[in-house]
Image 1 (cartoon, rainbow, N blue to C red):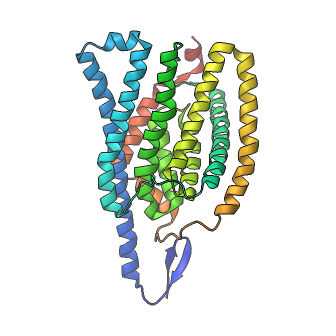
Image 2: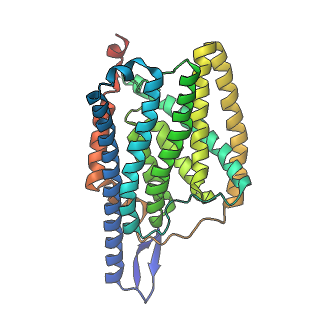
Length: 340
């Protein structure tokens, strides 16, 4: 007897009847929707906590200090990142773990191979450079249709203390917290239903959480690459290293432009991007050859398309998409209005 598709291939056998097959498919879809609801609620809680901390600062009369002191502002942003993203995903991550049955979704152990991690880092940085170009192309396409894209102004402190806190915030805290949340709790629990599915969904949520179309395309492409290398090396630390490396590159380039002008900026940027594209491309080839036999066999009864649809049709995910689209609209304007 011929049964429907199992992992993209026709499945047939005498030990599994059609009713059991359909029941298992339905169970998987239900589990994925429950996990989607957990992820969506985690994002909503993260947004609520962000606004709550801003409200508390206003109640304490710290709004003027926040606006006037770059050091206080950056220090507060560090705390808000830690106290909003991580708690939200930790709370709902526990629920996700119960639903998925994954014993340890967070692969925080030391990478098994330092050499593979090195290859993955350079290959991951090359992927981030490609993601930058994807972002530029997307922005150009939007401009052709008459729209200018923008993103929140993060500000660049010029004092030594301000620069130090900025590096800590963007390079270390953001990379660690976001990877633990998105690649750890989200991707780690969804991986039970397939690596590609888990990587895509975690990258999509990563992109949505940025709330603007300047950062979102980059986050989607780089998030997919980071998830891929984290899974292939079996360690979330690989993702943290790539994320931190990209953020460090961004901070350094920003300050090069701030202190040395556009000519130096263009020269440094071009040379760095060329290095990562060439060196990372070579490392990517070797990385694929060395890890081609490390992929685990997946046992999902759903196609990737079915799994993604189940995830995206979760009520909480739909709510998050709507909320983030509303936030994103604040950073899209007709070119005439943006210029004026």
